[in-house]
Length: 144
Image (tube, rainbow, N blue to C red; front, side, top):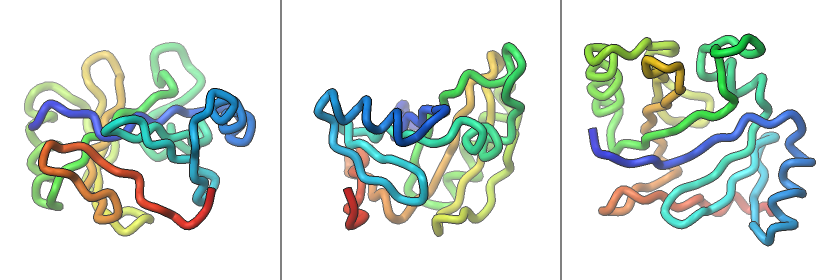
């Protein structure tokens, strides 16, 4: 597994309020289906409803230690690599909370938590092409 973080998703209580905050900091976001994407150097910072993020990660929200409200994503180049990385993580001691499967956005992904409960999504997302160095670029969704 390459050492890289492709996206950091923040589970927020109120997406419009969170977006307005970041835009007051002069960040420029694009919203698609109640999800806001910001380009942040070679990664993306994403704002998404906290409950939706917990559900997508396959973890419980609301109890101390269950979910910290943040998910890290490691994007890979192929579906097979998703399977390989999730299997390697499980063998290393991770808990698979969402086995690899097709996603609603046309990709393929699985989620595991590390021994301290941090959620990692391993994803092949054709819309987020990886540069040679592993960095991602948020696509132009045609909205702002």
